[in-house]
Amino acid sequence: MVIQTAGLRKRFDSGEIGVEALGGVDLTVQSGEFLIIMGPSGSGKTTLLSVLGCLEPPTSGAYRLAGEDVAHFDERKAARVRRERIGFVFQGFNLLPRSTALQNVELPLVYARVSRRERRERALAALSAVSLLDRAEHLPNQLSGGQQQRVAVARAIVIRPDVVLADEPTGNLDSHSAEEVLDVLTEVHSGGATIVMVTHSREVAERGTRIVHMLDGRIDAEEQPVVPGQVVGPRHHRAAR
Image 1 (cartoon, rainbow, N blue to C red):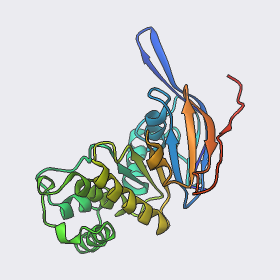
Image 2 (image 1 turned 45 degrees about the vertical axis):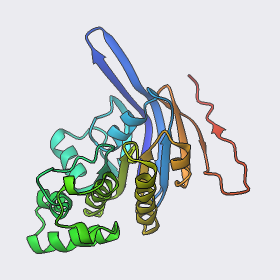
Image 3 (image 1 turned 60 degrees about the horizontal axis):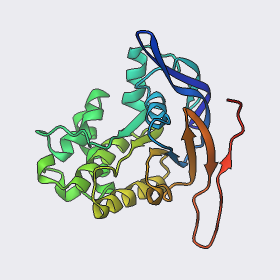
C-alpha cells in the first residue's frame, strides 16, 4: 500500500483556544487507487491532505508512505519527501508567471538535481501526457485556466511520485475546462498513478475508484462510485466519538 495512517490527529493551538482538525484518522490507500475525499467545509479534508503531503506534521498518530514512517520527520526530511515522492496539484495552479510551461514542469527536477538533458526529456514527456506539448514555450498568461491546471498536473507527475495529491483541482475552472482536467487525471490514473483528491463535487467524485466522507475530523463513511444502473449507499464507520 502507498498510504497507511492510524489514529492520525492534528490540533491547531492559538493561545488558549485549540481546534482539533483531525480527530483520529485511520486510512489506507492502495497502489493504483484513485481515492476521493469529500465532506462539508471544516470537516478536515484539506488538513488531512496537508498531513499526507508532509506540509503539516500530525500532532500524534502514525503515517507511513510507501512503507516509510514519515509522521514526525523534521522539516529537512519532510522537504525531501515532498520533493521526491509526492506530486501536488492545487486549486490555484501555483505556476511561476515568468516561466514557460516547460520550465514550470522542469522545476521539481531542478530541485532534485536532475541533469538538464534528462529534465527536458522528462518534462516534455509529461507535457505530452497532458496533451500540451504544443504549448511548451507558452507563459501561464498565454494559457487558459484549464491548460494551466494541466501544466500543474504535468509538474506533479514529472517526478514519478508515489502519490499525486490534488486539492479541489477543478474548483477555479469552468465546466469545459474542468472536464478536460478530469480527463487528464483519469488518464494519468489509468497509467498506474495513485491519486488522492479532495472535492466538493459529486460529479467529480464519480471519477474515483473509492470515496471517503469526512465529518468532524474523522472518516465517517466510505463508498464505491456508482456505475450506471447500480445503486450503492455509503458504509458508515462506527468509531466511538
